[in-house]
Length: 260
Length: 87
Image (tube, rainbow over all chains, first blue to last red; front, side, top):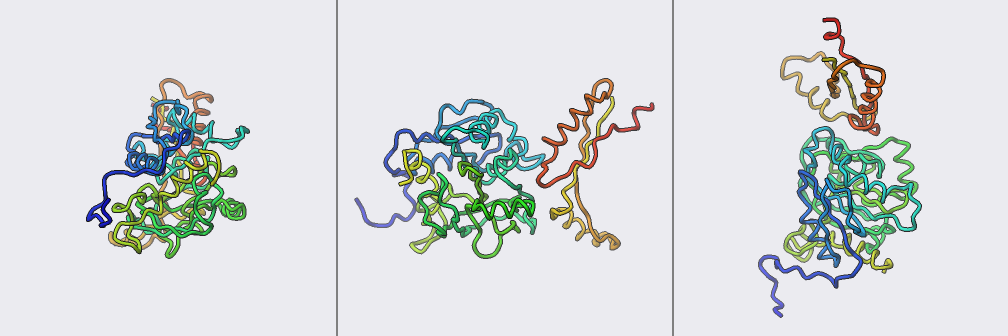
């Protein structure tokens, strides 16, 4: 095996050891953009990606679900507002919803537009409005991981700083003052922007979880930072950042029976 | 055919970035008398036949559960459009 650094990233994915039982669904809606990247991130994290379709009520027995980014149904009404009523979402809301008392509710991750869907479905608190500066953002963003008790963040260290891309126009996280205080005191902020607030989000919140901790949503894109050559720049070189991969190895490890 | 009009506005405490952008652009038209703009949405729901209380109730449900998001918006009115009724 050559020890030379490749000039460009290798196309051959070298996934962690495949773990039986970690079947992770990735839902495609009309207008979804990042489903293939999310599926690839699942594979690189050692899981098996299963394609799910918005119009199909069945989750096909997957162990976790990712709602990827994009522009579902054109987001004509509000971002994620129409996707929230897709047949697949009815099942997802039932299986992930807080009212269920089963011992292990379905882990769900919403990225960007997927996060917007989860807030529209009221599985997560708050909502997103236009960025305060009204511009589309596309840049690498540093986040602090503040909650490592969810299935999606279990392998991060507390307050770990990670760099992942973000790209959105409607990413300003808003919620009522009362709910904001509740989220903060209950430790439900999972990811927080570090440095300048990129879009006016309340308390620089980039991602939150629900009361039970099985549903997580964030605006930035961990699935775009899973493979050297295609991620953000880091200390080891241009585009080498793979900080997002831990989100996917975390859920695979959690599903395989234990958080390390 | 009767029409039910639903009007939705961003909550007062929520900053309205698009309204602010419009307010900032009005002086380009020489209009400097407006100190603020807030942008909302108007939906027209067409109904076949009479607008009964039941139909109005479903319009209210549509307004509350799909046409608005209670976290960031208020439904300010759900009403039958007057003009065509009297013709």
